[in-house]
Image (cartoon, rainbow, N blue to C red; front, side):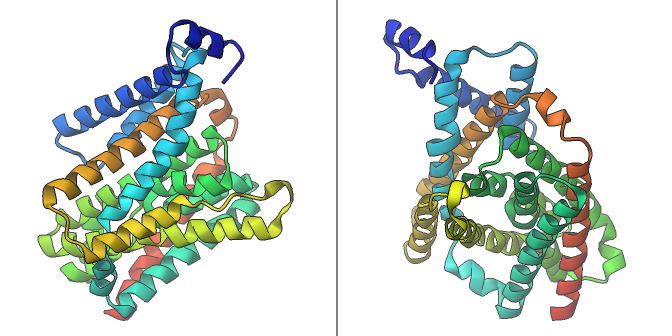
Length: 335
């Protein structure tokens, strides 16, 4: 909070973060309503809509400084609460349903993609933080992974926005292309679902591509994709531990909220919540993540984003091609 915004907020009798929180929530609500009205298209999610709206507001009409305390709150505690509640999407049964071979394939594809994208990013001269965020979004679960990993990576808002743009563009292309390519692969519906779940960026994209083929493909894609989501927690913890071992100025705090995510997933495995309650918790998770992305958009300056040039986009394309090929190869080997 700046010295100017605090007295202004106090003079109005407002809690300083309130204006920014309300605008972030308003963007999230508007994005969610638009997504619902348009039939929940898998091409984009409420999170992406909110981020785009926030970027447009920041870079067209401009935004007052007194929103900053609230957007900062949305990008940290609200974001982390959304990630914790994301655990209600998962159970240990999801891992069992994939099977040992399927789980080994998904883990191998995920981590090989993550480390390859980071390595290629260095070769291309892309910043280490942006490379790591593109790697996380490509290998794990799109925008949610970018935001989760950034709690350790500590990239700029522009880094986050660029990484999310990459996973949205290439994940949407995969969602459209995978069903078209299915006849060329020789996969049956189950194999196609496993390939889709192991290779597409966002949960909505994987589910959309799977169910466009059949219920069997959609269900398998959902399970495989949620298995990747579950691996977000150990990835964040591992990156945090590496930063702490490295020490110095780059030392990062342990992302304790990840333990909350794991605890919720474990609870969801042993207790069957009423469907209405579970649905409400997942809706809250999506809403909080959408708030965080709307706030991030409002803190994103396009001029800074454009200065990064086309190399990060090329990096995202390389990661996209690699994970699609690795997922197809892995699927063909185990089925």
